[in-house]
Structures are given as C-alpha cells and as structure tokens.
Image (cartoon, rainbow, N blue to C red; front, side, top):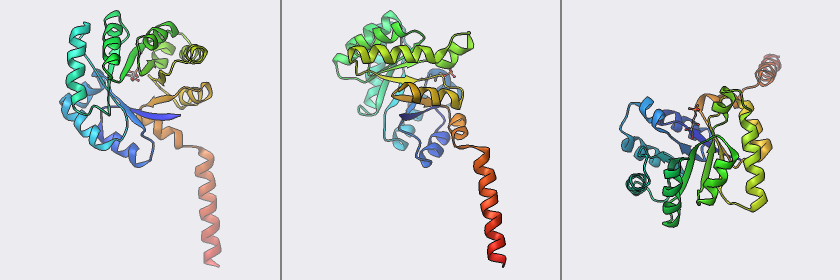
Length: 216
Ligand code: E4P
C-alpha cells in the first residue's frame, strides 16, 4: 500500500520523507489555509521535496473555472501535480474533460461507493473516500472503501483508491486489509504507526543486558 502524507506543512513532509514514508502528498484548501502560506509557494516547495503525486485542489465550483484553475496548477509540474476536484456534477464534468486532456485527477469529498463509481466512469485517476468524516456521523467509513474496492475489481477500473480523512492507525490497518491502493495519513498518525510499548520495553531490556555484559 502506498502512503501519502495529508498535509500542507512542508516541515512535516520533509520529516516523513526522511523516514521513507512518503509516496505522495494530498493537500486541501483547509490544510493550505492552516499553513498560512501562499498556495503556489507551498506547492513549489512540496514539488522540490517529493518525488510522487501531489494533489492540489481547485476552489472554483463550475466546470469551466475548475478547468482553468487546473491548467494553472498543473503547469507547476505536469508530472507530479494531481488536480483535486469535489465530487459534484460540475466536478465530474471537469474530470471528464481534464482526463481526456491527460491531466491526473483526484475526486475528493467522496462519501458513497456510487460517487466513487461515477468518478471512475468520468476517468478519475484517484478517488478519495473520507472515512473519518463518515465515522463522525455514525457510519462505518471503511465499509464504503470495501464497497468501492469490490466495484472497481468487478469491472476492472484502474482508478486508485486513496483512503482519506484518516484519524488513527486502525484506519491504516483496515485500508491495508481491504486492499486500498493508498492511504493518505496525517503526520501525527504516521508517527503512531511506528510505536509499540513492547518495542520500547524490549529495547530497554536489550540495552540494560548489554550494559551488564560490557561492565563485566
Ligand atoms: C484528503 O484528501 C482530505 O482532504 C483529508 O484527508 C480530509 O481529512 P479530514 O476529514 O481530517 O479533514
């Protein structure tokens, strides 16, 4: 399973890259706003740090304006930049047009398997089901991912599934068990993945035994 990092904070991206955990990056308008920086400046810096797909989201709501924004964003790096679009009717129209022109697209704000199917039919490169936000409203977010996996496999869609709105290591584990292609993970959750109390206890014991041995 590929790991994307879900942030617009370049310090987090650099730190996770050092750990060898970054296959790509996803950003969204809220994450860019949180960074407090100019969108294009942040993207340029991420492009210089990461050798993989980088999702940059449009903020227009009609297809023609989405396409115009996409053309500007993609110019920053036509290979790496993936245009992130909301799963709306206008978003689907723009996705169809952009995929025909060879742009990579990531359909975001997906909350049902049928929305994901529509995205795949429009030619999306990626779909992003938001598991954490589904859990928040009492649904089982990972069930949506499971259903998308089944539908894409049934019909051989090449659209890749990015499990998004990840809140815990449990989400990452379930994504792997289901066979999602990618999990986009906040840096804080990435760090939690490496932690196990028995690793810490075991290391402490190894080092204590070693100290006793060398002191003899
Ligand atoms: C990623 O593509 C999404 O924008 C992100 O995972 C949303 O996460 P949130 O629900 O924690 O805001």
